[in-house]
Length: 446
Image (cartoon, rainbow, N blue to C red; front, side):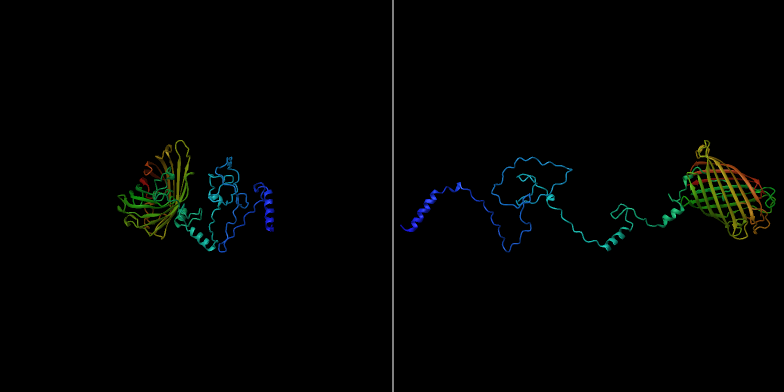
């Protein structure tokens, strides 16, 4: 028998004695070699896919489960720190939370898996920052998009003037913080109210001349005119003290005849230096210009000009007094001519009133006035007297001082309409042209 036949017979016998292949264990299969990428394909930037636990994903022969196993719900704690972000799985579809890999689980939001996109932040430019700050400092509108909060206010001339000159409030409105006060009645051209007021005040004065007066030998002098005041702020105001006409009617035996003509023009500024409504205290001062632009027939054209610096103070007492508060006023000043044609004189005035029952309606009052001629004028050397606030003769009356007293009242119809009157007589000193005087005024105040 040929040799090859013997070998085939031995192989057949050996195969018949060997057990089936299914009964023998197989060695573990090696993982298939990684697929090589084509030379022209770029490598993956994501890297090898990984499982949740961080191990490389291996192909699995287990079939994909078709039903989700019963797993307990993951407890949610609002105080616990956030769970670590799961890594992307190799399988397709949206990533799911650990333990929720089964089909039908809710996907994790993209913000949980992917980090937020970074915004580009250019490098700081100091020049641009400086320009931006300067642009915002140009007084932006309050509450606007450029409003950066508190900043130094811009300087304004009107604010500075208002701070120095007082608060303006409503245009030209009187200072009504002292409505318990009243204006004086007598010596109306020189006795000034310390408040800043806006008003029109018609005035009538009748003055009897003593019969024994050597120059005019009786008769009378009258004034009919108006005053005006304008309040710029609660401290600053301007005053027209004397504007109107004068009538001089001498006695029958006088060498002088009766005449009527325009009076001098007196005006000037007033400023309230102290204004304390709580304490009821006022202090004001000003400068009056006595301009002799009136009629020469009634001695209203003497010289060229007199300057009168003055000051006035007001104070309220006994505010809680059951019968009413007591108000006091006092004024002092000096009139000196710019030339020797006019007489110079000193004047002082005082006032006290009672605000009956503090109702601001009825005010009985008492007033004192004192005039002292300090320098003779040279306009009328034949006249040996002076006319106080009605006339400046420029006469020879140096050293003559006259003190007068007055009783009267003021009634407030309203705060904007008031009427006042007083009767005045000499108390001490040479009477000159003053036997007695009656003064009546009516105030229309804003």
